[in-house]
Amino acid sequence: MSIVIIRQDDKIDLWKQALQQAAPEIKVYSYLEDHPIEEIEMALVWKHPEGTLSKYPNLKYIASSGAGVDFIFSDESTPKNIPITRVVDTVLASDMSEYIVAVIFSFLKNLNTYKIAQTKSVWKPKAYHRITDFTVGILGLGALGKVLAKDLVRFGFNTQGWSASEKSIAGVTAYAGNKELSSFLSTTEILVCLLPLTDETSGILSKTLFEELPQGAHVINAARGGHVVDTDLIEMIDNGHLSGASLDVFHQEPLPTTHPFWAHEKINITPHYASVSDTASVVPQIIENYRNMKIGAPLLNLVSPKKGY
Ligand code: NDP
Ligand code: OXD
Image (cartoon, rainbow, N blue to C red; front, side, top):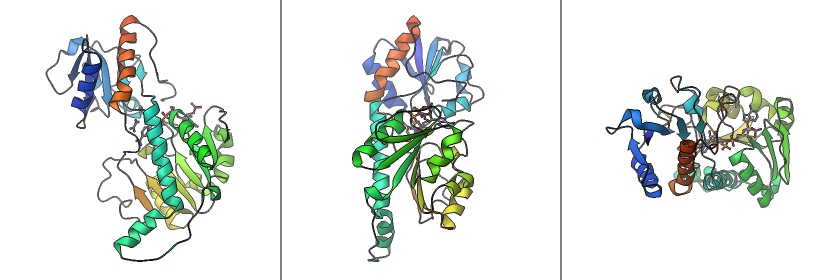
């Protein structure tokens, strides 16, 4: 019985080798090679082509090789009633935290403004900010948001967060549920989105939400492009309510070359690379789950089909 890897980027061989090295007794196939469809019990997926999962009649378990599972739930042909897991990993979380901290410091010290000025040979100092000038608010205090919150507290940022259920994190003001969202937003000057993409969170970064942020707020989205209403974001930056945005994720990836985000001087773009599953760190939990599945033991990092994350 075997594992199939299904993803459309160039990392199939990397994952295959890492799995085979860690557990030589397990057969691992790329979905692109000839493989015994009936033998496949587990699929390790990342943005798989829709419909591919339904080809395996004996599939018992689907593992996302990232933290997100939105692409699994949005594929209507995903087999129902089999467990789905995701990655929860300390390296993934610290990589994300380092990325967000870098973006925040770049915003505080106007580094993007100077990068643009450099392309025009313009020498023009601009007042910079300090850690103590801003309150950072994190949408989502899960595996990633929590680590970021703790790091920001260590740096000395006034830090707050919002989640579905109540949280208690030392030094962090925690808000929960829709009834507390407005209070959270009214004091958030740098907004970081680390929510999963679900029916409830899709389009959450809209004009209605931006209007509740203080004038001059900066928006950072490293979660999913589907959280953002793109036209609302541009409108709220152009009318001066928001000072700008830093985006790692987009509705369509790669971001189409004609998209207005590319040319916007107040929008910083990175290519969905804030934090990437590191095979060395992640493969052990994938193998452990394969073995758990074989003996009927509980799987690690299960997601809830009801909640969608
Ligand atoms: P988790 O599931 O651990 O955390 C999600 C958090 O969001 C939880 O705190 C949860 O609340 C909260 N939440 C979910 N729905 C709602 C809601 N409707 N209202 C309020 N709060 C809500 O996810 P991770 O932290 O591991 O990852 C978050 C996302 O980051 C991933 O889903 C993925 O899309 C993205 N990501 C992006 C990467 C990149 O490179 N750009 C890399 C890795 C991940 P509660 O705790 O109460 O359940
Ligand atoms: C993830 C991602 O979900 O890389 O892990 O976006």
